[in-house]
Image 1 (cartoon, rainbow, N blue to C red):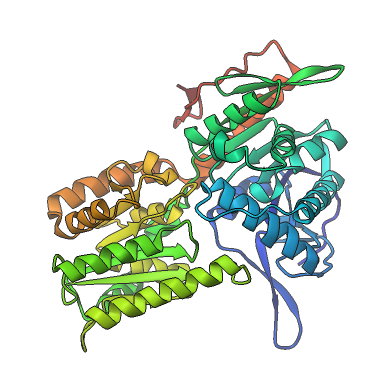
Image 2 (image 1 turned 30 degrees about the vertical axis):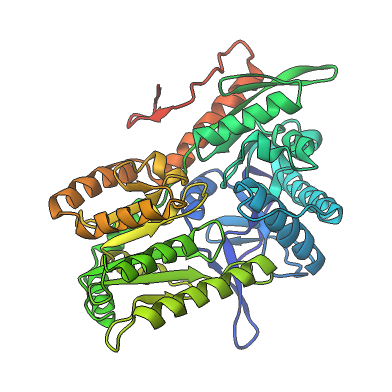
Length: 498
């Protein structure tokens, strides 16, 4: 691990967390391991080619770390205090914006001190970025924790080309308008040249909010941002559905050791005819309670039997210091205990519940072991678990039951699409999945695999960065047409077509 030799980078990614995790060994030595996730995989080649830097928080409070290089990527840590974590991160980001942007499934909290700290921390990220970005660099800001950074960068570094991608939904105006700082957030986002969303509906919600709350003209995906005594600036706001590193999941699934592990998992569950799987962060947006309710009722009605069907629920810990999440954990574990108490036998457990995460190898084995994947999110920007399941099923088997309120439902149309609020409809879909003939399972999975294989995370990043490059050219040549259609297809020869 070496320090960078200079501090001007042509491509800078800014996110709440760094792409590496800090590890302290038994002897006190510090090391860094690459974080799992598609975003790092997608941007790693671009970062290396463009001599890029990544600005973000190291994940621990009050840790001061000098910039360093890790595996070809320049790392620029931003310091957050415990106060920042409580107010900017756990407070405004995850107890105000997160529930608001997820259709107020849980009530958002509005506290002025949280907002004030959110502004201060966003400015800290913007200052760190401005200090390392080269003249005319491209900066790509990630997600809802940093929505003010684009305009802060625009004010201090007008030479930069700035992109922003929102990994979670953007709510309808009637919901968004509840936010006391709604105009400030819009102003912050409109500092970008390109603003990306998961779904066309999210981009539309954003444009409607702009029309209602500002004087900026909007047309299709284009927003003309007027500034006093300055030429107007054109901002593109459209959908860029994110994906996964498809190839790595399929390669793992084809390994004999993973396939053997999948068999061991089924045997460990008592070799039921059908294994159903749920994989989620323990979050109130994921609809875990709805899923358990539907499964419990099916067992009570005799439409499913515990000897034939087992539900494996993986619920990885999330925001454990937030009261709503502590309460959710208690509710889920109580429900699991009740179902197992009512329907479990000496040899068969109704629900195999796991409140921890698993490494990717084990997850792929679980995907291969599962006949049915249940994704019942009440609201989800994309849901990459659904795509991971499809990518892993090289055998063209398995059934995906997918909430229509996920971004993935726009692409994976051959899944069994459900409204998770409709418990009777969800129960019918589960039974249909369990009883689906092999021929139907294969046809559906092949169609979904084709979609996921064609639209991987590398294509997503190329799509966004190509649009950002078009925006950059448009800034210097206003005669160049910048009107983009809502949907663009990235073809094999790397040209844009509608």
